[in-house]
Length: 496
Image (cartoon, rainbow, N blue to C red):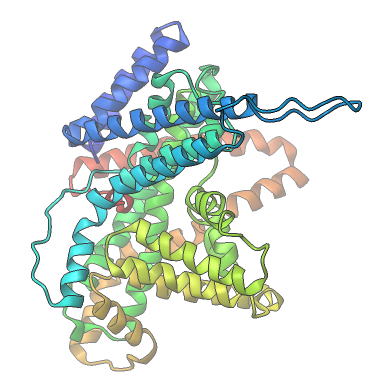
């Protein structure tokens, strides 16, 4: 993390909340959150905080300019005649259309993508050109600013929404800066849209209930990361760093399934922490995961997985491309384009691009195949198989490594003594217990229990809530104990 885990939990967060709770006005509270967010980001990357400030200032300016020219264009549009009267013509020399707002929108998109292009994709571009043309150009060594993909997409959505008149352009730069830089979601999302928090930036309340719920949600996310994701990561890292000769069908499937759990509990854990921290300070963020591993199709999977990203691509790329309005063939093509971009967004390597195209291919096929008609169990099995294979591409260091591991998942029926021993060494009692608990936690068990209690014994709801808080407290103590022993693994999505 930007701060060490223990210092964040035991020092940074209590100090920030104490200062936030003591100041009376919302303007002062927002000011505190801006300052601590910048300190939080600058602690790990002092130079790149200037890049984030420049990005936020640039998009604030674009929003103001687009709103200004949109107002001018609307003022000088011809007025419709009423009751047979004459229409008022546009003022001479003034635009009668929204050409200037469109130009400003295009300029803002180009500028934001240029930020990403230079700092995230320059090395990939040079390496690809070198490979294709046999050149030996020097690959630029540019450090990737943490969270640049997340805050750039947030900034872009703000400007687009101003252009679409879905939000008013803010006259307060600090308000836009807080929206972009707020430390709970700055590093790895969720990707928050301005229209979802616009009113909360100017009107929200601090409550005991909100703080309690936020702390519980934060603890759940922390436990997902420390107790589950990190345990899975040990086995996954062992296998992906091993010699390929040690991989057979058992090893390959252990790696694939363990990584499915690692990435889900790692990223959903961060999202829970972000949502919980935001709730502590009075913000309400939308959910970012909804039990994705119970999906019966890849289309449903993307409605449940990283919801903030999938909805971002839907609203700002898929629908502008035509969405599903121009026939099934065009719909399939649009999905393929979206998931090419989705893969590229995740990282500047071709394994991520192929992962995106892999998902796009199955989404395209689902436009023509009757996946919805499959029994629910078969649909879930199909979706899990596609997702597990896709995550091998996502995790692999190279395309060749991914190809070999995927091949072993289906053809690796060789069980040499050394290979079998390597597989069994991964299946420690701790791994097996955590794996089983993680599989259970991937199911909406809590919702099932809540419905059962609601129907049968309503008075047990209080005990269920109390039990949840007690378990959260115990989980927090256990997480702190584990973190005290060292060995922290950064969140997977920190590098995106």
